[in-house]
Length: 515
Image (cartoon, rainbow, N blue to C red; front, side, top):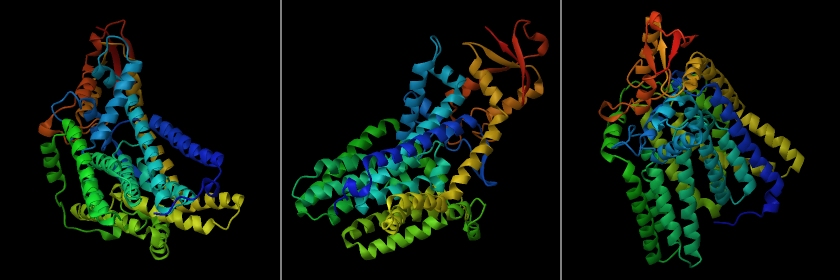
């Protein structure tokens, strides 16, 4: 693979640092703002009026499961399995508890009483994972394209794409999926370079195995083949003696085995298999292919926001294969894996009766398109001077993803409107002293709240945002139970005279009871 261009040719160090700082600060600031507007609950998310998924899917399942990940016999949410994500979320909860919790209050009690803040911090953590994935995409694109400037175009095209913006401050495994894929491929490429110059790349191969296995336990149906893919690329695509290539494959195998053995301490493979055998079945035969056309519909949102990226990325990919023979092999290998991811997306569409909403299955596709759209754009802007290039880059980003950026603002404003109805409940719960509870003093108010706490349907909640929809053996969430125990029913005539009282917008009069 060719060497990277010099930093002088790419961009001045100060300008490059400012550009990255702008991306990091804008993402974290936007995430913090939108998280505060709507930290948790359960309503149907909508973009331009097109309804998609519930707000707590899958965040409510992951946060509830993470809380008891190391104390329960198996994960409450078998997930995707999302094990690295769950460990990270547990770390967020533990750090928040350690930093803020008063003496004498237990971990579960504190987390339940501050569940809205826990959701906020968890979403900010998800944004940090996205930022890590952006840097991985940049390193991946820079190595493949041999151009830091092209890699920056690719990274900004990816970071402002509709799927990324939709999930930017939502808890999901997608940023980790992209992170582990890019870093695994980078480790494989580094190992190949080591072998081709006569050195040993075994350490890089073992690292590739560890990263691939970590990807496997992040999103199994997309990254399950990644360890085998790494071995295949090293054995078939490396210019080295057969003995060295066999050693490379064995090193990946060892790294994969060690990592899987470690991850298996917190994974129940039987429950995971049972879940995916159920949810992976084909559920319908009706196919609504017309719903994928660009438009403000659940299936049309992707192309509404990404049609130009699809066109530019496809042109850039074909152009690269034709004109850049030095990167052709690496491009074809990764294209093979991207095609596999598209096959998984196609199966999902068919399995759900032609439901094209699943743009979260297109992260690899979007990342791959962004790489070659960035390459094409860099070559097109190469003749411009510095100021003209800056102006052209801004216009390019607006044309490419102006609709996607608008969708982010619109959908988060909608979420804020939904959460506003229950914001006073969370503020009241956070204000409780240890051992205090909330008594709802009208029967309609208590039963309305109780229905929402228990859930309109299995695992649903419009208050705390936690979910046990996929919990094995109908297990309950310790966090959800602790939250529900904060509310009791009391006749207003029995309320102590010195009790703090008030009224909730959705649930009527309340009183705070002390022990």
